[in-house]
Image (cartoon, rainbow, N blue to C red; front, side):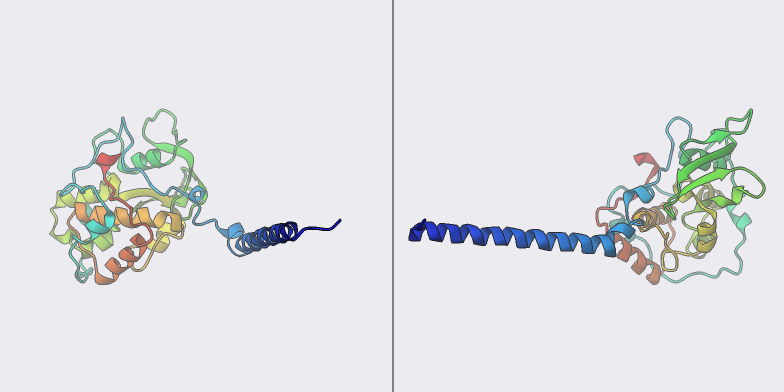
Length: 267
């Protein structure tokens, strides 16, 4: 069978199109395999399932907001960061935990101490000790600092596996403005649900009194919320940041420019 010149050209054009499609499919397959073996199968830390990208402040119906020095303004966290004072640390040699009042008071006056309030808030399946409506006996949750499923069980040896962390560490706050607060304001800072999250005990110990310049959660998916929460707490209690701390916060927020401030009223 003899093809005409027009038929020959059409067949040639279809052949080229077929090769283009095959080449594109091959490139996509190679790229997909490359992603899987270099990142995809190990992309755990940044996946939403690894831990909450947000953490609650209040639980409706039984938690109350703790009065801060001033309200946290709504809006981008990066914008609020620009309003914070930037200067060096004050001396820490006179720091004493007692300056922030008795640990785990019932600051929101709901009848339960702050530590159990936070455990109940952050552990969705929290169980109480027999005869109590406050004391959390056990529970499990997706821990935010590491992103790992974690179980809490009350006990002399086991309780420390899950700790309640001050997002802005009290030692850090002391060096950045808390010395100028009243005793009552420092007490609120130490018990404000805005500044508290149930977390992995070893991660909390590793953090210590560090700020964002020297420690960030290993779970990268939580870092934007973590930094925004620190900024919100510092704004609420008129605390400042160091130049290195501000730089670290700006770097984190650069990956999430839409990150908003965190406030109890928004819950």
